[in-house]
Image (tube, rainbow, N blue to C red; front, side):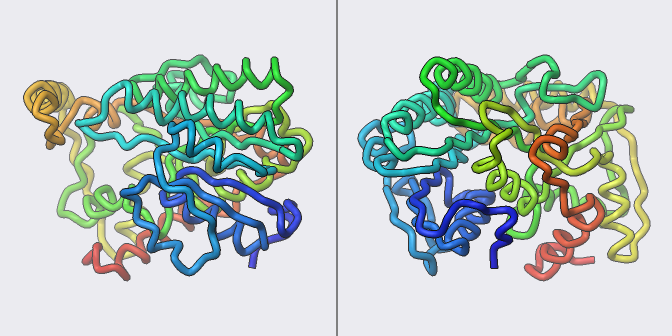
Length: 341
């Protein structure tokens, strides 16, 4: 059952989801169907629809930046949830990111504006547009400092949407998710496995703050933002109440399985060098590098955000603490046989 206080879109309303076969997309789509909405979704021809096979969904198969697909899919919709994002892969080019993040946003917004009954466009970005948070926690007004093509094109899409919607009276809300996790996804699996090893390696000497958002909290934020009058034209960071250090995540996992975490600090410089060399060799061959600079830099950056705006304006308070969500996810990993204490 869907919480009617969270989803106030009337049953039978036509809604469109992009990125429906992704982790957050599956969670959101199930909630929309459970609420009795008339759900359509866009999925690439190569996407796996099996996780949603049991649901009544009208599918549009093709690229989210294909104008013909967008025209057909947006026609008659009252709400659009734009979750689609490009994969971070060695073979991905700046043009790939631009198409999926910027061009798709432009096409969807322009078509949504033409729909006579259209209510709101919920656009999903990323806290990555802020880059490293030197003075945590960061609010939505923190300076932009995207660090790669993925983040740069996400920011470009936001900036374009703000200007277009303001000039064309399009109702919209932007959500910047923190690191999405929860049962059904493997984002934290490597980290959790490390917590059960004899030593838990950390690169550098920083705090390495990480801000998580449980997928259920995130998709609830989407639903609230879709109908809340004060969300009109606003941007919200969606995350847990507080950030958490990587070592603290490790401690929670280790404790849950009755282990003792032993942190091993390693110098970060050699890993930067190794990452640069791997990328230099692998990327021209379109091979995923075994290590790359962004992964090493993960340990040197803090990602800590203030979610007061989400709580005060939308009235949504995270339902999962970091500890609750981490334990739930660890338990699920173990049930899949992926964690073996």
